[in-house]
Length: 428
Image (tube, rainbow, N blue to C red; front, side):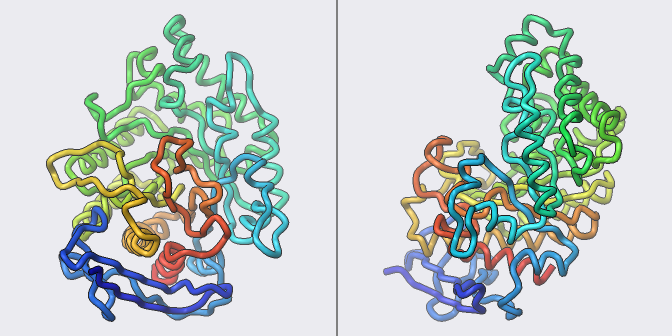
């Protein structure tokens, strides 16, 4: 019989936020990658190390939104802006559209797709500047800061027209890269970006290449992993000298095994190498697509703090959280013998179980990383999507059904994950 622990804290916008419901099997069945989480009836939850899980929350003015609390800490809270069809869908009561609701709850926008190279540059010599300009104009009209994403995303060009073109014309890789960046620089209002992800996801925890770099049409054509990266940063400096240049990367948040610890070390070494070769890197955008399968225990926190210190103190970079969300990670696949485990599919959890684990991992992660976001001067924290009605972890994207990755439900109701975000900001 499952054992349940419940904690209720403050209310927020008419909804209970401080709800920590812990369901753990009485036999110690693991609920997530954190380990065997056992419910202690009436007394919250503890993990195998004796650390209490999040259950009750700091009492604060319930009228303050997450955006308000972030502002008090000098942090701008934001989200991605996706397709017009999703953004113009009806919002909750009082908001005609979803984007009106997002605007009321955030200070920073980032384009979800209109600046990604495969969308922005769908064929040789063709650039979709109109959609990018519309995003910038709307963000500015709403009084939002905004950040760019992204100029060089080589993984997305595998198998595309770029791949075919560079196989036939390898000597044209830099001209092609620079043409894309020149087109981005021509978008009206582009110079108002607070920062821009020049590079995205060029390392992989599963890579067998030296330094963990991903293969791509660009690296093959250039005969180098670092040369195209340095070229992209230098070109962005030339065309947008007053916009901060960021390195964006996934899978660097939950360092639960040697695979991911090596990945983090490769990221630091790779960025440092490119900086030594002349890449003008200003900041690091930590995506933070968190998963249950990797959990977040004390060792993960220690490793992440060391990684953040390397980025911010050794390399002198600003640090932001750029795409926070949370899912089970069921079937993600990179398993190794050093402690990383798999997890159940979403259907293997009750909704209270799913939300409790997500709340706990979110809080632990943010408690670790937000002090570095503030101290480094990055001062931005973005959720990739705010409600489950437009998330990126659906069956259409190859994910198992039932993921609940966002801080609000698909009917705009706050979830325990939102309470974790709120309280991490209150305490950072």
